[in-house]
Length: 172
Image 1 (cartoon, rainbow, N blue to C red):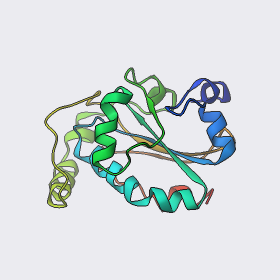
Image 2 (image 1 turned 45 degrees about the vertical axis):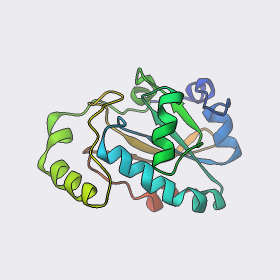
Image 3 (image 1 turned 90 degrees about the vertical axis):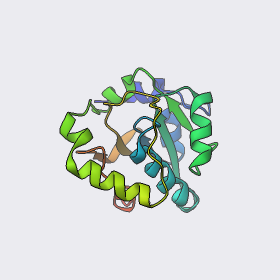
Image 4 (image 1 turned 120 degrees about the vertical axis):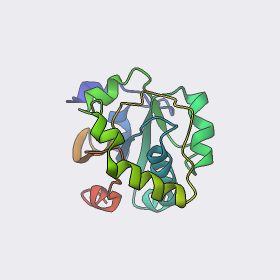
């Protein structure tokens, strides 16, 4: 898994390291799936709806994605997280460093995924036809403070929806 050296060498779109960001405020580090994934869009929408509340609690949200910053920003803007600090990781190296692997078919295409995908589209989030990123990459969420992981959520299924309140409760 990650070390302080990894956090120091990982630079965000704001030009600072993850270590520096976590020493200034608690960091909610969210690893997204590919931008065509309905669950990635749902996660961005959930974060967009809560980011101001989290900022008031001194929590900085940083998104990790598999695209370039230029390609990611329109997706971020569309789902309410435009301008948010982020990390581009098209090679999925950081994902692997945090223990996030590739999904098995049952984690990506199981019955739970189809049901949740249908429910999500009923909420107005469209299924994407264009995949930007590795379609097999699994997501995850980490709460980091002073270069230490305080809490984590590793998705068992691409359709899992993290309980952000539970995750941030360790540092809020």
